[in-house]
Image (cartoon, rainbow, N blue to C red; front, side, top):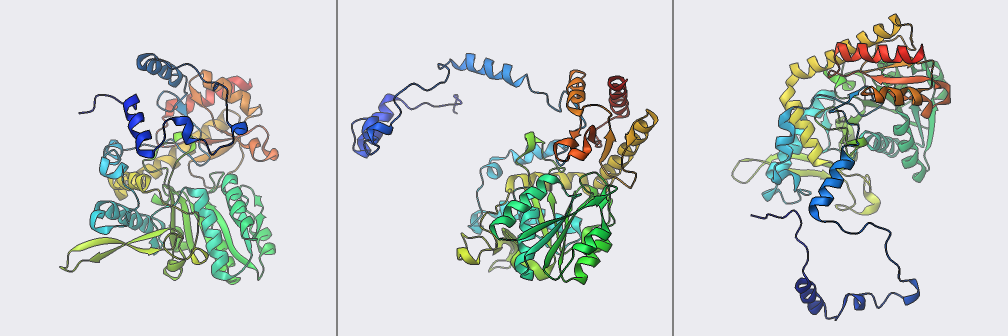
Length: 449
């Protein structure tokens, strides 16, 4: 049994390695680097400490964190404080999962392959799509990959993205599109949802895809079916970025005409982790199966008729010629996809529905509480998880004051749009209690008074 967290290299180890390499000193290893460019000074780092002193210092630094375990969080904007079943960490902490690499050899990777297959199956069922891939980096990159797939499939060079889509997701789409010389056009939002009339004016014969979010960045639940029909009238693909938890109660995008449904599985058993890493999902109709970025795991039988799992379609540059690859920068998040799968399994269909309903009910309660306290809740349509509140005060200063009261405030919308000065995006998940919501309303009211 190893008793030490860190096993240092001894002088004898160093000498033996140098002997094998065939040099007499560490300096000799760097002889090929010109003397004039070598660093000669001392690094500006603290002197080494003993393990005990170092652990104490790190613990003191960690104690300065304001985390959701000890603070009440109303911060969302794409990353949420949700219930995580205890079993999630138990399963993903098993060494056969957290040390696993790409399962290229099915004969020794059946557990990992089956876990990915289960993730694909659950995502496909949840989104109402015909198939899903093994995951992508996160929701933003999944949306960008959807745009590139649409452009390649339609051989068109224009993507229309709703202004009600997460601003960071839109930025990622623009970054991907720039390298492919694809134009990204923003369809304006009106009253918190995509402006349908403005979208109609933007559609043309060069439009590859129309992208919307469901529920959108402002928490509004858009009527996306007419948008999909409009896209299809112009022979463009309809791409929906969906919160998977909301799909526990809302009609799946696949039943509303979506050709591609993407999103982030973070609401299912994945911690906020200061913004990542998370787990993007990517689901499509069968007609797009061979153009999906990343990997697909399939189920088969071996020579003796026993069930088995294999990598079925692999459209990455490691597997095929680089110029033929669907994407050269996609990858999957197998461990976090497993976490999402475990969480979905633990919750079950009824548990997921109940969790989604609680998000709706508690957000509704928060909306009414703010209105009764004299605040303006900007958008009045159907909403999930989030609302936009006019604080009538500087949001940064307000959030700083709330933090002193043990409350993590919402997202300052002025950071992404100057039209939203003094407006905050507040997230209310199933974890928030009536008392916590009432305390937030009271504290914000006291600060405004």
